[in-house]
Length: 245
Image (cartoon, rainbow, N blue to C red; front, side, top):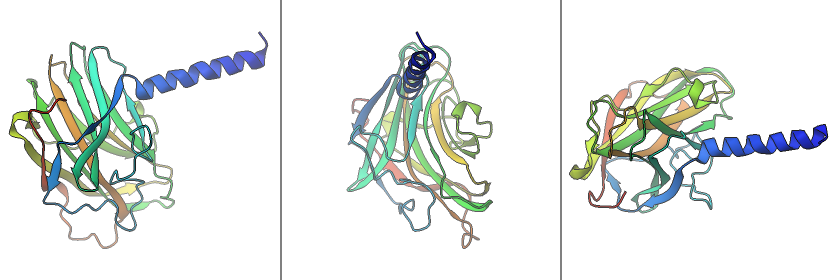
């Protein structure tokens, strides 16, 4: 086999390996039993540097435009991703994590390169997330973070910003949960990447969590003085507790 054919073969194997890392065990779904109220979507506002931060754009495969999705390759974990309906014409990204006997921890997430940020400086960042769980017994098991870093690969990111300060996220039986925002001013360098990552830290058998991600916005920090920062309750998300997950 000549060197060119060998190189092409290795390239093909690498592409398959990367595809397996990104889409392994992911089932693309839709959640139509959810709704949200009490907040004003802001990710589509003028000046946001995030592409499809309100998750209004979806491709033919049922995945959000502008984002790369990925999941760990753990066995005996169920991972679903797809569109979550928050109301007429209003969508979020849903990521389901369920343990059917998988060991250790398991994570999934999305990322995108912030191509339009060309100058270093302070920017106002908002990321919204909600989550509900069932069968989780370990404290701080259902976890969600975001990060802005020059690292493209999620496994190399070291400074994650926690989205849930509580010991447990909302219980599935409640049918309602806070639509939590993390809002803050951050220094961002050009050639940075925006990451969102969710998952289970522990192997609670039979447990699941549904994470809803929405309204991610990065704008110039000018004019944001006086806005509340930290974890902010921007409304509620409701769902059918009896719906199949």
